[in-house]
Image (cartoon, rainbow over all chains, first blue to last red; front, side, top):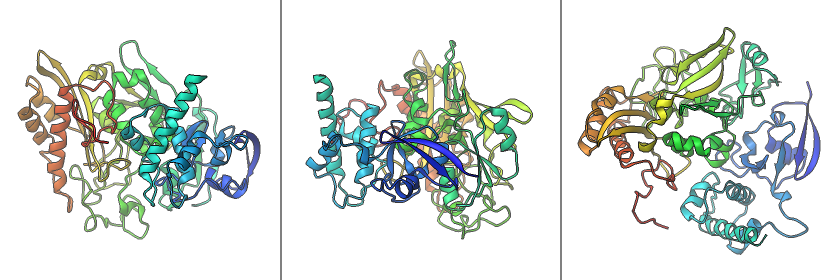
Length: 163
Length: 352
């Protein structure tokens, strides 16, 4: 039986027909919607490479059944830049050399955006490291990642103060 | 992953009827279930999606200080609910010491109770496992078992229950609300999970179709808020299951312990309440000697199930330290590393 769902992906409403309910949100994004910026690492919820914002909250897309997400809103790495302008977290990752091979980077950036939205870490590097522990980086770029998240947090806080 | 039928009931009654069918499994967030299905460990023919059932996602604070937590409340939302964290800080600390932020954003209260063991032999289809295939045997008994149970295990199964959340819930007399084919009923969380015995495939008291709809903490549990901690030893700093953990909660009057609550995690196939240790603390000053004596009582019945005798002494030390941390007082803000033995003690200098 075909299941029909509606998803808002990076601001665009998409009607999706699922002939097979086994499709994860990760596979839907990559194979059906061709948004390959979201990476498949372990596919078992252990590495964080597939992190997206699901209804504004960072989530492992590999452990989400698409069929259960009718009406949900998804933001992926492709949906961050506005008018050619990188998101402050993307820019901070570049400025702090917070990557090497880059495979985990989309998940790291989506997780960092989720972390900042949660507002629990502030400017405490220990809380940032703990809050980012669901994203593995086998190149070991953790030092730069922590710096980038702290810098992005400061930039976004300054932007809010100015507004 | 096996093929399955995906049902989206809109009422609890519809869900229970569908969930009682042979081969059906409830699906909420799926954070554990999908992992198990991808590995072929679970092969339900029908998934009954309860994730959108109305009315199960609320945290209801009672005027007397108790709380009712809907089964679909997400782990992160519960831990960060200001009223909840203030009244039940050890539960919030346990929640935040589990999994990753992404998983806590998805995983539900009901799912946390019903998550399966992380015993590697349960996950490995090439290994014998009485829990996965009743009567098949247990390859963990002679295998890599340094992280396995030291309390309540049987020859049939030496796995542990992996939940952090359930440990302080057991200590604080939480109650599980269930709706099944015969209506609603309640089970104390301490009696919700079964020890393995001869039937390790039966993990809880739930019957087919039974749906966990809420978890309640009584008003008395909030009376421990000033002195309640959760402490968890992991094999890495963060994002790992407990080797051993302990929840400790004290009510102090005039410098003496008026009441104590203790439970352990990572030591058995259920969260392990230590009532004899609690009773021994009443009337004592919360000093090191009393805490160590209580910890010894908590592990009095422990026995290694393999290469894990170290866990018994480790558990004693973690119980004693959790009690001392609880006696020192619940911190105003949870430490940067919740439940971590590496977390800076109050007043100590943070390392960067």
